[in-house]
Amino acid sequence: MVKQVVHYLIQNYCTFGEIAIVTIMNKKISSIPKGVKASIALFFASLVTKGIAYVTTPIFTRLLTEEQYGQTSLFLSWLQILGIIAMFGLSYGVFNNGMLDYPDDRNVYAFSLLILSNIITILFSILYLGFFPVLNKWIKIDFQFAFLMSIIFLLQPAYNFWISKQRYEIKYKNSFIWSIVTVFLSSFVAVICILLVDDDFKLYARIYGAEIPLIGIYIGFYFYLAKIAGFKIKTKYWKEAITFNLPLLPHYLSIYLLSSSDKLMISFILGDAEVAYYSVAYSVAAVLTAIWSAINASLIPYTYEKCKQNNYKRIAIVTQPLLTFYALMCILLIMLAPEILALMAPKSYMNAIYVIPPIVGGVFFQVQYHVYGNIVFYHKKPKYIMFASVTATIMNLILNYIFITKYGYIAAGYTTLVCYLIQAMIDFFAMRKVTKQNVYNMKYICILSVSIILISLLSIFIYDKFFVRYLIVIVLLIMCYLFRKKFLNLIPELKYKK
Image 1 (tube, one colour):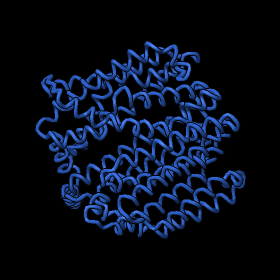
Image 2: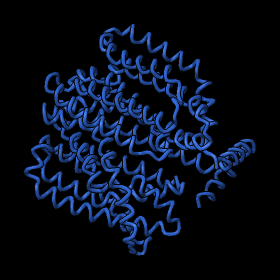
Image 3: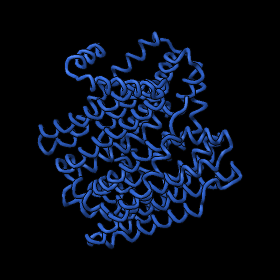
């Protein structure tokens, strides 16, 4: 039907020359490998979803009080962390392994893991809600929000499994559409709900308004997965999934704790308003995470291919410009932090600009985890990566407890920077252990790293010097322009190969 409509529009409203251009474009688009289309779709989906988050953050920071915004951030942090345990991380690597191992039974595999996830969630919820009065001394959220979490944990895996299956099978159109629909609907309904209620109920409107529409979508996908599987369950898949995922749970937890424990400990030690300030600063750096996610999506298969060929030199040649480009983006964001924060939040949040530089510095070292970790994962040595993430997380918890108490929420940015640096160092030594070589030009990467650390420490002293900051911004933009060809020339090499 869509093709017929397009054909009608072309025939009736396009000139001959325009028809020729459209025809050529269609042929070019059709000639693009499916994997490239999928990568592009995922990139734009990530861009749009992060864009919606960026657009709605200024709205939420102005509609909610600092305490309400902080409590929302706290709820979302616990939702991620407790979700790892309650849903057992079954939508991660183990699910893709199942898609590979059982190509003719994928629907039953997905539904079987969904039921396994539900059983684990029910057991978790009984313990969590049963001991809620004791646990809530540390978690600090209302019981009704804890109950809402349990419902989400029960239903969300259906959507997660469907999305993972679509992406594995490179069916990018539906996953692209639903990724955007869920984020847009959740944000839109939350804003409307906040506008319709009194101030005392805005926190509930924000959380329920965002989550209830998603729960409705999850229910739809739950019944869809059950239907296409014929309601069949194979318990043999359960043992494989539990055996595979149980050792990885500390790693999955560490990844989320390293990025979220700051907010949890700030709430526990200082209060919800300080969580709001820190969360807004963290959301400023989120755009950098989105950029690297898009880069890494292409870098992972490229790294694996070159590792298979034992061509580590080529990995270094390609990765160095990418890391340089990313470092420039980090510095650019640090320099523009006052202006970005002014757009993201009201004046009451402006003191948070001083925590943005160390957070951005931490993001740069978080990226190095991927640079080294991609190679370690290829060599099937995840225990090294797990050791790095668990070590960094434990140190982060200890340092946060010491320094947040003494110096406030801004200290959390610097402790996170230190811990991501330690994680990157451990991952580097793990990579060198499995490859018996440095792989990368470590002298150059060290220069980049030291530069980022110095800028993270010193930039706060020039935030009130508009001319100096914008002079640096202009220099950075000129550098990006001069090196644009070197960066763009990497794209064909990173493209997906059938």
